[in-house]
Length: 119
Image 1 (cartoon, one colour):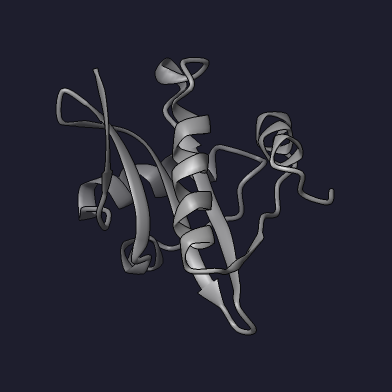
Image 2: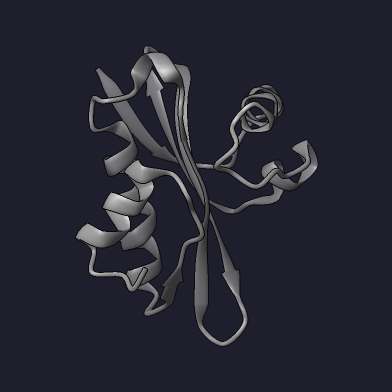
């Protein structure tokens, strides 16, 4: 069973995410310290093990960027990424923020399109 928790990343999670992002051509990289400083974070866990995360950051002029959306490969195609994206989106929307996403990943582009974002 997958649990979705709103909390900051631990050092081990940020370290693993940093390593995996570096292997992925569709995500801009962040340093471990930067990943740990994101305060609007949704984490997906399976049996208390990290399986993915959505990290957002507030920008000036009422914009929020969904900056990182990542699900470990063995947990993909189970709706986890969509759920993380939806939670990140809802968090920004509840605060009446405009939402900004940059991605070349076809799965993320579909999520953006489904939300009516201008691509």
